[in-house]
Structures are given as structure tokens and as C-alpha cells.
Amino acid sequence: MPATEPPNRQAAAAAAGSAIALTDATLAYGDRVLWRDLDLQVRPGEFLAVLGPNGSGKTSLLRVLLGLQALNSGTARIAGHAVRRGSRDIGYIPQQKAFRAGSPLRARDLVGLGLDGHRWGFRLSGRPFRKRVDELLDLVGASAYADVPVGLLSGGEQQRLRAAQALATDPKVLLCDEPLLSLDLHHQQAVSSLIDGQRRRKNTAVVFVTHEINPIIDYVDRVLYLAGGQFRVGTPEEVMTTAVLSDMYGTQVKVIRNEGRLVVVGLPDATTHEHGGHEDGED
Ligand SMILES: Nc1ncnc2c1ncn2[C@@H]1O[C@H](COP(=O)(O)OP(=O)(O)OP(=O)(O)O)[C@@H](O)[C@H]1O
Image (cartoon, rainbow, N blue to C red):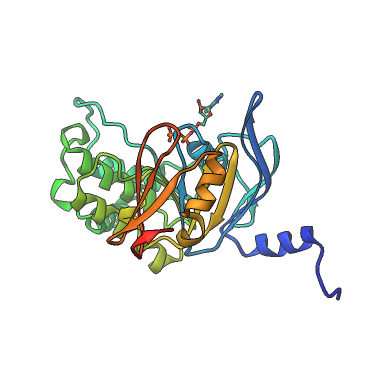
């Protein structure tokens, strides 16, 4: 056996046990390259946060993993298989959109769709189906409004149902697109600790797109930061630094750690993102 394996063999070996494996992945719309030659392996049970400014390609990354968006080059695999639509290996919490006020769908119907909405695989019916829906409603603390039409529920209540729906098949990979948006602090904590509990109990790999890392900083293993057509992958301490982010944005930004919070100031689009951190002082 050679002392050092060729890079493609190393990549193949790393990809083999991964829940998610992107290899040399490039995504562009016309001339606009969102990311190029992205190599990323996410382990079973790992919690990956995806950060970056508006339009940097975070949702597009999820669409690639969902089999809804083709790469320009490279490969994307979930649990060892090429990505495809409708995979039972994936649970997906989409960006929040309120349900129509007049929707006749009840909370339990929405959760049930997570069990029988897939085109392939086994289906539960009758009593086992109802039992599993009840378990899922209980898991997200939604039993009290199980029979209420979803259009009458608050944004936070609806979001908990989406989480239950996404977890219905105990997926190997959970993709979350800003699942905390418009939730109050209490429900942010409830939904993020629910997701953390799932990956610990079931070894689910989590990809969590967010603008705000503070509510999940205790759970995050690694960050994928997308900006200016570039990407960085590493622990929050490795990626969320003045040097790394200034380099990515091509302008001086500052990462300030203060009382356990991490604030990024001077971003080009004049937004200020707050991110969680561990120590005081500029980094
Ligand atoms: N099908 C498409 N065709 C052309 N351009 C697209 C398509 N889908 C997305 N885009 C563009 O690609 C860029 C990245 O979009 P994407 O939704 O992935 O960004 P994002 O990082 O999730 O942004 P946000 O934080 O605003 O949600 C945007 O400028 C968007 O307009």
C-alpha cells in the first residue's frame, strides 16, 4: 500500500462512511459561480451550520442535496447514493411560509404526510400510522393542537409541526432551511434542541442553514461559510475569525467576541450578524 494515498482515493474513502459527501462540487447560474470545487463530508450525527450573506447559495446547496438542482460539475451523495428526489434518507424543514388560514389540513394530517408522502418505501397504515403520528406530535410538544387546522396555528406551532414531519421517517440526513426564522426565543430553543436530540438519539446528520448561529452554537460541530463565491469549512473557532471573514468578503470585517457572543461588524451589505462565541475580545 502506498505511504500516501492519492487525493481522489482519500476523497473516496472519506465519502464512503459519510452521511453527505460533496466532491469537487461546483454550482453556477449562468456566469455567476456560487461555489466551486466544494469538498464536504458530513458524518452521521454531525451538526453542520451553513452561514453566509443573502444570495451566497445556502438554499441552493440544500436543493442540490434534495436532488432538485443539478451541479455543474462534481458529485453529491447521500448515505452512499447519488442524490435523488423523494429520498426517504432525507428529512427537510423548508423555509417558513405560513399556511393558508382556510386550510382544512389538521396538525396531525401534516405530520402524517411525512410518513406517507414519500413515493418509495414502506407505508404505515391504520393503528401503527396513528400511533407514530401521535409519537411525533408528542416529540415536538404539539399533542394539544393535534386536531386544529394548521392555518389557525401560530408561526412557532406550525414550525414545530414541520420539524415533526421532517423527522417522521427517522432520516439519515436532516436538512433545515432557516428553521428558527420568526420564532420567539423559547421556540427557537425548543426547535433547535429537538433537532440536536434527534441527531444524538438517531445519529442523524444535520445541515442547518441560518443567519444567526447563537441559538445553536452549543450544538454546532462545524460551519460551512459561503461568501463572495468562496467557502470555508471548519469549527466555529476556525472559521468565524476576523482574518478568515475579511479574506472571504474581500474587505475588512471584524469578529468581536463579547460575553460569549460573537458579533461580525463591517459586512459589505451593511448588515450586522451576531454569532455565538466562547471568549471575550477580538478574534
Ligand atoms: N434557478 C435559479 N436560476 C438562476 N438564479 C438562481 C436560481 N436559484 C437561485 N438563484 C440565485 O442564486 C443566488 C443564491 O440563491 P440562494 O437562494 O441559494 O441563496 P441563499 O444564500 O439561500 O440566500 P438567502 O440568505 O437570501 O436565503 C441568488 O442570487 C439567487 O437569485
